[in-house]
Length: 326
Ligand code: TYM
Image (cartoon, rainbow, N blue to C red):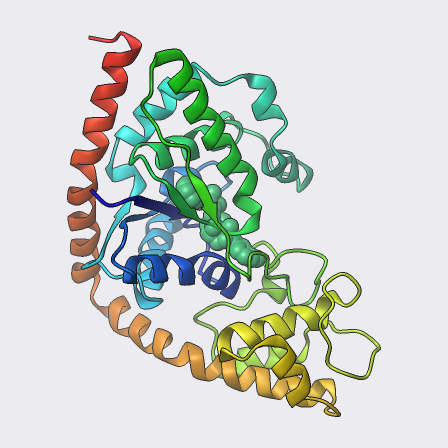
């Protein structure tokens, strides 16, 4: 068996270019290399840890599946499925709960941030990292493509693997995060914060129309320097835009700075919007086709679950035996 790659995305809004550059592009590249067995899933159980409208959730799950397929995840190469279709994710979470200290969960950054943002903490939000460890270890993953915000959760999964192996015998590999260069794409209107669905004004969705792309890029925060430059510490706004330009155009950062020497921010922003419109167009076209073919998308997700299920069952059975269940 090839080394395993696992990653997931939460269906709590449409996919944005932060998800795309921070995780999806790497997920597609790993799948295309044919060197790994890739498992990519829609983390619907995770999404339930945040306030949501049950009437909207099914559509969010479906739309995210469409988005990841349009962005390049390929069911011929990867198992693409919905987390809750494999109950072993939740079963293994329960078992991992028994070896997890409450103190460690209390210290998790994302949990504390969500509470600071005003979210009412439920037990699922608290237990979020344990479910994530189960997602990863269930398939004995070695590599996990994620953005920087998930780094601590990855460390948690590694600790869980180590603790389990120590107590019950070698069972899990310690998974490594695969971080891209665009590990933290910042919000367009507030470059101190990462781009996220919770800040919609600064969030560029893969489905944004050319008009909306132009408006968002034009309104993006920069600084009072006159020249395009790259210095994420001192000049986070323009550096974020240069990085996005570099990622979508394939041009190296110094080449971009040279290309726009003497040009103002307005000219650079026009060019960036054009690149985004061009590069997102094929994804958007594929997206529209898939949105109309619900049956085909659901079939892909069912097939993906069928591929993932035997592996998940085998791991859970082994774990249950090791911990003394009959
Ligand atoms: P989610 O849905 O919030 O984000 C999906 C992926 O996109 C990355 N990302 C970003 N990368 C760069 N810049 C940004 N502004 C940005 N915003 C988001 C995230 O780091 C993530 O990789 N907990 C996960 C879902 C999950 C998971 C897993 C991931 C559940 N189980 C197991 C890996 C393995 C999450 O909330 O992703």
